[in-house]
Length: 174
Image (cartoon, rainbow, N blue to C red):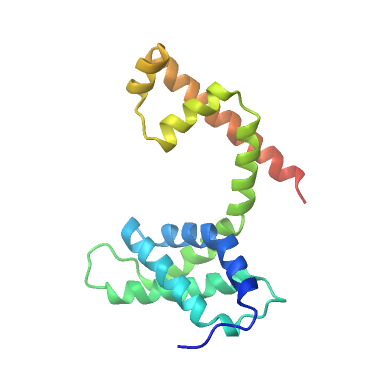
Protein backbone atom coordinates (compact mmCIF):
# COMPACT_ATOMS: atom_id res chain seq x y z
CA UNK A 1 0.00 0.00 0.00
CA UNK A 2 1.33 3.43 -0.96
CA UNK A 3 1.73 5.93 1.82
CA UNK A 4 -0.51 9.01 1.97
CA UNK A 5 0.65 12.29 0.48
CA UNK A 6 2.59 14.59 2.81
CA UNK A 7 -0.24 17.13 2.57
CA UNK A 8 -2.94 14.68 3.62
CA UNK A 9 -5.20 17.39 5.06
CA UNK A 10 -5.76 18.88 1.57
CA UNK A 11 -6.45 15.41 0.21
CA UNK A 12 -8.93 14.60 2.99
CA UNK A 13 -10.67 17.95 2.52
CA UNK A 14 -11.01 17.34 -1.24
CA UNK A 15 -12.25 13.78 -0.74
CA UNK A 16 -14.77 14.86 1.88
CA UNK A 17 -16.03 17.74 -0.27
CA UNK A 18 -16.46 15.53 -3.35
CA UNK A 19 -17.66 12.31 -1.73
CA UNK A 20 -21.36 13.04 -2.46
CA UNK A 21 -20.52 13.41 -6.17
CA UNK A 22 -18.53 10.17 -6.10
CA UNK A 23 -21.43 8.46 -4.36
CA UNK A 24 -23.85 9.71 -7.02
CA UNK A 25 -21.44 8.49 -9.70
CA UNK A 26 -21.28 4.98 -8.20
CA UNK A 27 -25.06 4.82 -7.76
CA UNK A 28 -25.60 5.83 -11.38
CA UNK A 29 -23.27 3.10 -12.60
CA UNK A 30 -24.60 0.19 -10.55
CA UNK A 31 -28.14 -1.10 -10.26
CA UNK A 32 -27.97 -2.30 -6.67
CA UNK A 33 -27.53 0.14 -3.81
CA UNK A 34 -25.31 -2.33 -1.95
CA UNK A 35 -23.00 -2.61 -4.98
CA UNK A 36 -22.82 1.17 -5.28
CA UNK A 37 -21.91 1.52 -1.60
CA UNK A 38 -19.25 -1.16 -2.00
CA UNK A 39 -17.85 0.62 -5.07
CA UNK A 40 -17.80 3.95 -3.21
CA UNK A 41 -15.98 2.44 -0.27
CA UNK A 42 -13.46 0.69 -2.53
CA UNK A 43 -12.98 3.94 -4.47
CA UNK A 44 -12.25 5.90 -1.29
CA UNK A 45 -9.73 3.28 -0.17
CA UNK A 46 -8.08 3.29 -3.60
CA UNK A 47 -7.98 7.11 -3.61
CA UNK A 48 -6.30 7.07 -0.21
CA UNK A 49 -3.77 4.52 -1.41
CA UNK A 50 -3.04 6.70 -4.44
CA UNK A 51 -3.18 10.02 -2.57
CA UNK A 52 0.54 10.53 -3.11
CA UNK A 53 -0.16 10.52 -6.88
CA UNK A 54 -2.63 13.42 -6.66
CA UNK A 55 -1.27 16.85 -7.42
CA UNK A 56 -3.08 19.29 -5.09
CA UNK A 57 -2.68 22.00 -7.74
CA UNK A 58 -5.01 20.07 -10.09
CA UNK A 59 -8.73 19.40 -9.84
CA UNK A 60 -9.54 16.49 -7.57
CA UNK A 61 -12.86 15.36 -9.03
CA UNK A 62 -11.75 14.33 -12.56
CA UNK A 63 -8.93 12.27 -11.04
CA UNK A 64 -11.31 10.73 -8.49
CA UNK A 65 -13.86 9.91 -11.22
CA UNK A 66 -11.18 8.04 -13.16
CA UNK A 67 -10.37 5.94 -10.09
CA UNK A 68 -14.10 5.37 -9.45
CA UNK A 69 -14.65 4.32 -13.08
CA UNK A 70 -11.92 1.67 -12.85
CA UNK A 71 -13.20 0.52 -9.47
CA UNK A 72 -16.73 0.09 -10.87
CA UNK A 73 -15.39 -1.80 -13.89
CA UNK A 74 -13.39 -4.07 -11.60
CA UNK A 75 -16.46 -4.74 -9.48
CA UNK A 76 -18.48 -5.50 -12.60
CA UNK A 77 -15.84 -7.90 -13.92
CA UNK A 78 -15.92 -9.70 -10.58
CA UNK A 79 -19.69 -10.08 -10.85
CA UNK A 80 -20.01 -11.03 -14.51
CA UNK A 81 -21.80 -14.22 -13.58
CA UNK A 82 -24.70 -12.19 -12.12
CA UNK A 83 -27.70 -11.75 -14.42
CA UNK A 84 -28.04 -7.96 -14.30
CA UNK A 85 -24.56 -6.81 -15.25
CA UNK A 86 -23.89 -4.08 -17.77
CA UNK A 87 -21.46 -4.70 -20.60
CA UNK A 88 -18.15 -2.84 -20.14
CA UNK A 89 -18.87 -0.60 -23.17
CA UNK A 90 -22.21 0.42 -21.67
CA UNK A 91 -20.57 1.23 -18.35
CA UNK A 92 -17.93 3.39 -20.05
CA UNK A 93 -20.58 5.28 -22.03
CA UNK A 94 -22.69 5.78 -18.92
CA UNK A 95 -19.62 6.86 -16.95
CA UNK A 96 -18.97 9.81 -19.26
CA UNK A 97 -22.54 11.08 -18.85
CA UNK A 98 -22.53 10.42 -15.15
CA UNK A 99 -19.24 12.27 -14.63
CA UNK A 100 -20.75 15.38 -16.16
CA UNK A 101 -23.89 15.13 -14.04
CA UNK A 102 -22.01 14.22 -10.85
CA UNK A 103 -19.61 17.12 -11.25
CA UNK A 104 -22.63 19.44 -11.07
CA UNK A 105 -24.05 17.57 -8.08
CA UNK A 106 -22.52 19.82 -5.43
CA UNK A 107 -23.75 22.99 -7.17
CA UNK A 108 -27.27 21.52 -7.37
CA UNK A 109 -27.16 20.46 -3.72
CA UNK A 110 -26.09 23.94 -2.62
CA UNK A 111 -28.83 25.49 -4.76
CA UNK A 112 -31.37 23.11 -3.22
CA UNK A 113 -30.30 24.14 0.28
CA UNK A 114 -30.68 27.79 -0.60
CA UNK A 115 -34.07 27.19 -2.23
CA UNK A 116 -35.32 25.18 0.74
CA UNK A 117 -34.53 28.14 3.01
CA UNK A 118 -36.87 30.29 0.91
CA UNK A 119 -39.83 28.02 1.71
CA UNK A 120 -42.11 28.50 4.67
CA UNK A 121 -41.32 26.42 7.73
CA UNK A 122 -44.50 24.37 7.25
CA UNK A 123 -43.56 23.59 3.62
CA UNK A 124 -40.04 22.54 4.60
CA UNK A 125 -41.48 20.38 7.37
CA UNK A 126 -43.83 18.62 4.98
CA UNK A 127 -40.99 17.88 2.54
CA UNK A 128 -38.75 16.67 5.35
CA UNK A 129 -41.42 14.38 6.78
CA UNK A 130 -42.15 12.86 3.37
CA UNK A 131 -38.68 12.59 1.84
CA UNK A 132 -36.37 12.30 4.83
CA UNK A 133 -38.54 10.62 7.47
CA UNK A 134 -40.33 8.47 4.87
CA UNK A 135 -43.87 9.32 5.90
CA UNK A 136 -46.52 8.33 3.38
CA UNK A 137 -49.02 10.70 1.82
CA UNK A 138 -51.71 8.98 3.88
CA UNK A 139 -49.79 9.64 7.12
CA UNK A 140 -49.17 13.26 6.16
CA UNK A 141 -52.84 13.65 5.30
CA UNK A 142 -53.81 12.42 8.74
CA UNK A 143 -51.27 14.63 10.53
CA UNK A 144 -52.07 17.81 8.57
CA UNK A 145 -55.84 17.33 8.36
CA UNK A 146 -55.72 17.68 4.56
CA UNK A 147 -57.00 15.19 2.02
CA UNK A 148 -54.50 12.84 0.39
CA UNK A 149 -55.13 14.60 -2.93
CA UNK A 150 -54.33 17.95 -1.34
CA UNK A 151 -51.07 16.60 0.16
CA UNK A 152 -50.06 15.10 -3.21
CA UNK A 153 -50.76 18.43 -4.92
CA UNK A 154 -48.77 20.38 -2.32
CA UNK A 155 -45.80 18.03 -2.70
CA UNK A 156 -46.00 18.28 -6.49
CA UNK A 157 -46.08 22.08 -6.39
CA UNK A 158 -43.21 22.22 -3.91
CA UNK A 159 -41.09 19.92 -6.11
CA UNK A 160 -41.83 22.10 -9.14
CA UNK A 161 -41.10 25.27 -7.17
CA UNK A 162 -37.79 23.85 -5.92
CA UNK A 163 -36.85 22.62 -9.39
CA UNK A 164 -37.50 26.05 -10.90
CA UNK A 165 -35.59 27.77 -8.09
CA UNK A 166 -32.59 25.45 -8.52
CA UNK A 167 -32.49 26.03 -12.27
CA UNK A 168 -32.65 29.81 -11.76
CA UNK A 169 -29.84 29.72 -9.22
CA UNK A 170 -27.66 27.57 -11.44
CA UNK A 171 -28.16 29.96 -14.37
CA UNK A 172 -27.21 32.91 -12.17
CA UNK A 173 -24.08 31.32 -10.66
CA UNK A 174 -20.78 31.64 -12.56
